[in-house]
Length: 383
Figure 1 (tube, rainbow, N blue to C red):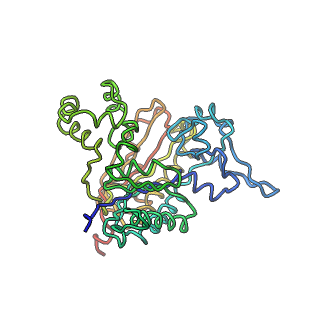
Figure 2 (figure 1 turned 45 degrees about the vertical axis):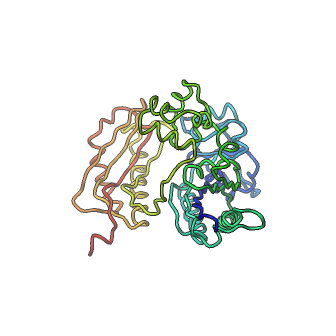
Figure 3 (figure 1 turned 60 degrees about the horizontal axis):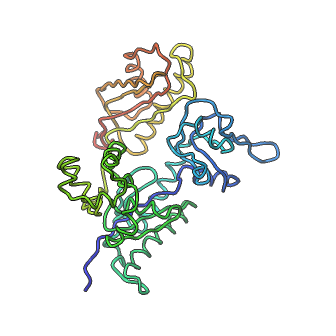
């Protein structure tokens, strides 16, 4: 009887925010579209029934791209890039505002669709999850001369269920562990399904850049490059002792294991949040006195949004905090612990306002955020 194999999937929604917007504006399908604008970039319905969209060529400000469609990426614009820089590369790209409420709704929908097929899920954010497949019926089966056909069929069933529930595509990597599955989910994007074992490392993994391993950041990649290492395979070629010598006992040993596809981490299928927050970056820097009314309205809206998040998820918190980033990019945080945990917008707004009074507001503000921490389940408080 063949040995039981461990199968972990990593699912990543394809250009998630942009794809959700294309459901709302199907006339933009196949066009370069960038998500990251503000309220003023909301499409305008015209008398003839068509919509007028904003374009990057008309953008002014310091916003950044949240995500972009694949045609936009082909023009050299990507998430995290400044919108003004993106406008130089793709002035014709359509610019849409961010709608996090809509994205969260679709996030809940796709995760529920996955759970119908495979209920053991590790939530990694709004658009990606890990899924335990090992013990699902059929996961260990061979199908039609494919030794891994059973688990491949489960992966396709998950993709089909997500598409039926949301109208969106996703890409899935299925491998023996989380580290490899994270890499594999990127191999055949968009709408991909990649199934790999350790036998596939030389052909499909080792030629990839070192940074494709989740855990190798810019600094580590630069150090590797300085040592003549650019790819995952070049890391794998180095002895463990050599990597330990250059990167330390813990990280060096991890690099060696990661390059050889070794990862025994279990899925974390449940965890309690430590805080919830909302923040916004302004299209223009606001002054505490001259723009007081606008700032006050935004501040109240942020408190209301956090309160809504807490109430929807059944949490209350005692520590209320704020975050500001000024026009010189200096960030400041303040917090206050109140006597009784709350999820009420008015209480959060009042405590956040007290925090704000402890900040020097002489400089213009470019970002404002409200946070509630020290969370606990609301029912734990009793009547």
